Image (spheres, helix red, strand yellow):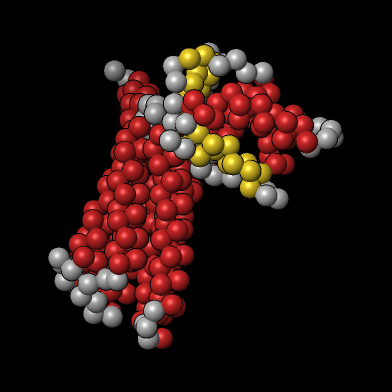
Length: 316
């Protein structure tokens, strides 16, 4: 084998193994976040001393920084990437933000010498732990780009839950007998942890975009409603439901963003086109038709959010 042949062989091997490196690093980063979230929950419940948990989480945060550096260094290396560089940068940054938020919350617990957190903070910790576990699951699907959406929808749901816990927690703090010092302390920790769920949702948005670009979005489901993208078919409780092209596209967009409000402008632009200048009541009419066809038997609700748009919720 000539030196040139050897170089070509090494380059070919690099092309085959390089993409796996990104997947492995993303997997490792997600697992690191999960371990940190688990340590945080142990501290919040009082089963692990806060200073001990903080030290463990700091070590994990340093490990996460090293993984992030390896990922970022890959951008300047002339080799194939697992996913496009912009998406990979976004994923890396958001994952790092999640871990930073967990470490910052653990630091607050140690600084304030907390022995056991208040109920709302413990509940928020559980939301963060669930989100971290979902990250490990969805990163495991990233190589094949299959079954990404069930995990991203869970991340969206958990972000909504985090919003609720934050709101209820702050309300309880200000309506109770907590001192100003305790209000500031717990509000800070609640907001840090809720911020980590926001970043998890950002990760979900990036992954959904990647899945759509890869053509991996083949089936969406909510309640007893199932949409087969490839076959352009919708079934409710295992029975086919005939939809017009516009109804199908509307339902597709709402299913993709299940539990989240989709703006009227987005619905009109994506379904009717950017050049559409007709009556906006057309959208409401189509939503009305969809409601009759899928809501009751499908166990879903198409919710009108006044002045903004529509949201699809599961409603058993």
